[in-house]
Length: 460
Ligand code: ARG
Image 1 (tube, helix red, strand yellow):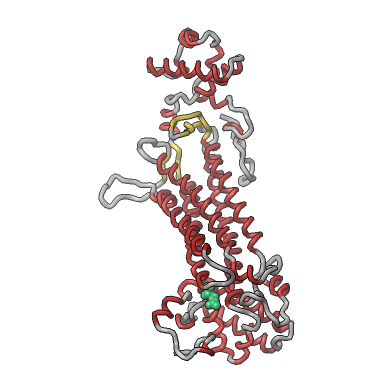
Image 2 (cartoon, rainbow, N blue to C red; image 1 turned 45 degrees about the horizontal axis):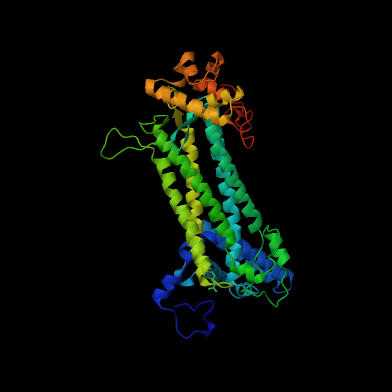
């Protein structure tokens, strides 16, 4: 067995079970790029500070580049007995360049190394997620544009409530995604500080320049407190929280579309390209991708809970438990990226069924609240108006009519305040036009100018 990089004080080697149990190389090799980047910045700084010679530095930089190439060519052999990505790369560097490699870990611990790698990885992950959020927003805005002017029933408690424009509904999801992107961008700003040089926990007595490595790696500044630098994973928690919120938004979209694709609603038809069939029922065409978007949100929330529970019992500073931060992070990011991609594809592949929607619109008294507004315009106090409309609805139910079908004498039998102009408030077409408040359904706004010329949704 090869002696461990930390093997000096040990007389026995670890058991196979312990080795297998404690390895992280099977998943943290995903950090190879960041690890090499960090090592290069670190070696450059050590040379500048006189802690290694320039020729050692050059040999190290070359060796690291060679390792990078061999990893990317799929030729690098990852060894479980070398435990993690950091020791795999350092040991491989020693294999290649010999003596100079032994200088690389000067004024560095795996504790600051791993968290530097992780912050760099998170920075890229946030950028990727935000880009995918943007693509989904564009897909949704295009879908809204395609359905300009289409009125659909709006629901509360899953009961027919008021008429809304379909673009207004779709843009509500665009708004939510806008905040999701904002939350991730906020965490990016907070996480972009450099832990490198915090070493194990206390910093170092060697004359390093933390500002130099921080700059080289594109961080805003070195982290102020070395103990904090190696201890906390709040930046991962922030990403997992933001991811969870985004995942829950997508899950709700998924639920709505699955419901709308049902025979009972029939408002929406996904194209074959985003549907799947049944192994037994030949007639089936299921909206599986959106069901899975809903389903996979569970993993993303689970990943957040895993990390919260992982961190809750940890005293300062680094504890090995923290090695368990990576899998939930990687899983959350990968899962959410997939959810965003598929939601965008689904959005590009759905058709709203005007006919079915049209058929649904007359029932459910969607114009009742507009009728109450009509009475308020006539000087009736709102509570009284509510009661009058309530009684009008009751009359409709008893004679099996819609509000717009009631005759003026019928309406006047409930209250004489009704006049001929009431009919300009009744029916969904009339009702939806009456909305005039900021943010209301005919005032659809788009959070950002994602598609030029949008929105112009006021036309019905
Ligand atoms: N693989 C470890 C992790 O992911 C690296 C740090 C280990 N440090 C240590 N002193 N054992 O956290």
